[in-house]
Every structure is written in structure tokens, then in C-alpha cells.
Amino acid sequence: MPIACADSDKSSGRVKGTDMTRCSCGLHESEAAHDAAVEARLGAAIETAVVRAVFPAARTRRAVVGAIGLGTVLAAISDLFPVARATQLAQAKPEAIEKKQLKIGFIPITCATPIIMAEPLGFYRKHGLEAEVIKTAGWAVIRDKALNKEYDAAHMLSPMPLAITLGAGAAAQPWTMAAIENINGQAITLSMKHKDKRDPKQWKGMKFAVPFDYSMHNYLLRYYVAEAGLDPDTDIQIRSVPPPEMVANLRADNIDGFLGPDPFNQRAVFDGAGFIHILSKEMWDGHPCCAFAASRAFATEMPNTFHALLKAIIDATAYASKSENRKAIAEAIAPANYLNQPVTVVEQVLTGTYADGLGNIKKVPDRIDFAPYPWHSMAVWILTQMKRWGQVKGDLDYKAVAEQVFLATDAGKIMREMGLAVPETSYRSVQIMGKKFDPTQPQPYLDSFAIKRS
Image 1: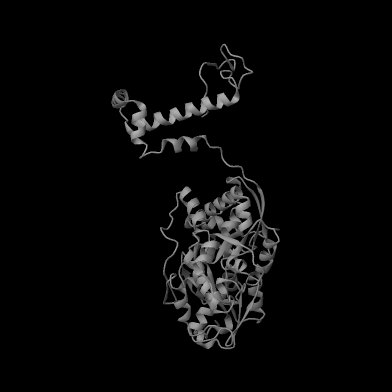
Image 2: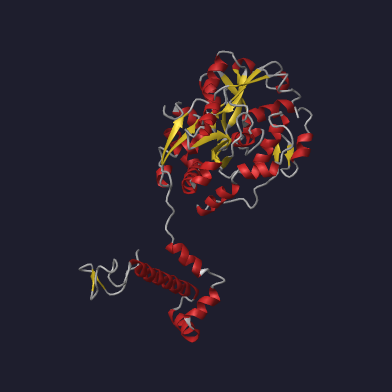
């Protein structure tokens, strides 16, 4: 509610005995004097509210203020409640969004759920944006369009902003990973003809697909077969295949299996082309996969737009994290302009009640989950695997790169604004396939692997 000036005539809109040309209310010599008076009244209102909150009983409040004075009371409680800051915040005007109309590229997979659903469910509009999400053919195309500024921001695999920043696979350009889109949500799917090859030691000579070289899928598949004693570069073949083409390649016998994103693991089961061998959460429960990413230039040159966009994504991610919303989300993102999948396929992924292709119905509620916080420790692990397989050469300051690219501080600030829980630290140790990863000791961790390129 606006704070009005005193002695105004509400029925006429004029102020008694004043010249209406002096200021908007007629009481002051100029608009500047008018604004100062309004600010003074606002400050007084806040001071009064604070005193009332500290001394709720009217008689007590009057007695205390009368005895020692309002100024003394406010000074005494200022250490507990920053009255000046509260007044400043109340007077502040919201920062203008520099660019409302945005283009955001995405790959049609369930990992992109928050980015996709934010359009049909209105999360971008809620935060003052007119964003268009654009279906894109593959990760190299996403990267190139983002680098060429055809997209303002993009759905990316969580290793991609690190790779772009380091100049791995493309010209180096400072990039940011502002929020994790999903955790878990991947699987190794095998052709039906391999139902008797459940032990990865039996996979020598087999052909596998992953979505992109710089992907959690590539690193997890390599980790998985290496733990079984196979060298992923010599004992099996790994090729990059866009996720929408994985099931067709499996059916055509071009590949024996894939470690890929959903809904294509579930679509392979739906089509009778394959079965789910293992969920990625069984390798590393809570692992990152996809991310909301943007250039460092976008984040710094349009900070208010970036803040609004990140807030919309985190808001959508929080909504997607609630199991009771998953069926409605499946209906929203299944249509042709988004995932182009049967609703039942998307629903099985999002709810975690699914057929595995071997005659079993499984219930894994967190088969895919949504948690936006971009742990720096996740970035350090990804960097160790980039080093392990020769994608990055030379010395690497893991901590510096992780904290430059993964914007844990920015995400944490917005999460607090929204009342979401924020970790006390951005680093944590985790168990990956039974092996402890300590993010403060990346080089000893890397050195501990028998099979590696570096």
C-alpha cells in the first residue's frame, strides 16, 4: 500500500490550500521534496513496527519510549534488527530485466524436465520472462548454437561447461553451470539378444553408444567397464549417438547397448528392442547429469535477466522434485514439440514404477530426481575423469576451475530466497561403485585407477 501525504482531499484528489503544480500531492515545493517526505514516513512506519514487535504490549511500549525516547530504543535494538537496512530494502525498486524474450535450447530427454516444463507450466512467465524452449538435434549443435549466441542459455550435459571453459573439444570460452537439472535418470540398456550377458566382463568386443564425449554417460560407462577389468578404449567400442537415435540403432543392431538418458531406456523396453541392465543410480546414487548453462558474458552483462532465469529454473526444479507432481509433468512434456513420446513411457521414468524389459515391474521412486544445487565436488569428480581419459592435458587446478564454472553461491542464494535447503558446504565425499571419492584429494584419487590414459 502506498504511503500518502497528510491533509489530502480524497474526494477531489487535491490537497487543501496547495498549488497542485508544486508536486504530485501539492504539499511540497518539488517532486524531490515529495519523495523525501514519503521516504521519511516509510522510515518512521518501519521504526514504529519494530518497536511494536519488540514491545508488543501497548502500555509497556509507551512507558519505555516515553522514559528513554524513541531514538534510544531504536539504537538499543539496532544490533538485533537492522532498521536502516530494512528501510533501504523497502524503498528499493526492483531491478529491471534487461532482456525478457529468450531462446533456450534443449535436447528432448527427461533430464531437461525443469527447462522444458517451465514453458507450458508458466514458470518463465511467473518470473517476468518470455522464454522459448527450442528442441535441438544433438549436444554438438546445442554447444555450437550457444557459443554463437543463437541461444541465450541452454540445457547442457554437466561436463560441457567445464569442457567449454577449458577449451576441450571447442575454442575456450568462459562458461557457467548455474544449476543441476537432474540427478540419476540414466541407465545401461542392452539389446534383447544379450539377456545372458549380465556380467560386464562378458562385454569384450561389444559396441556401445553414449550421447556425447563430454558427458556423465561416457564417464560412468567407462568407469563401470574399467571396474570390471575392461579397457573402454580397446576392449569395447564407444561412439557418440544423439539420444533420439539410440533405440533405432539398437534395433538395427548397429550397437549392442547404450548408457543413455531417459526416456530412451524406457522406450527401448516399450518397443521390445532392449532391457534395462542397470540404473545409473546403482553406480552413483545422486550423480549429476544435465545442467542449466549459460556463458559467463550472459551472466555478467545481463545480471537481472540471468537471476530471473535461474530463479525460474530452480523454481521449476523444486516443483519437479515432488513426486505428486510427476504425472502432470509427464503429460506436459510428452507432446511432439517437447519429448515426442507416449505419456506412459515418460510417466514410468518420472514416477519410477516401470517395466525393465525382463518381465519385472520395478519401483524406484528416485530413478530420476531433481536437485538444483551445483556441488563443486561434482565438478572436481568430472574433471578427474576428463583427466583420466586424456580429454584434458597438463596440470589442472581442480578447485579453481570447479568454483569458476559451477555457480554454487548464486544457486544457493536463490534457493535461500525461495526457502529451499542449501548445503553448508559445496564439497562432499561420495561413494562411487564402492570407491570413496574425496574432492579434496583429486590427484591421489586419479592415481588410484589401474586403467587410465593420463
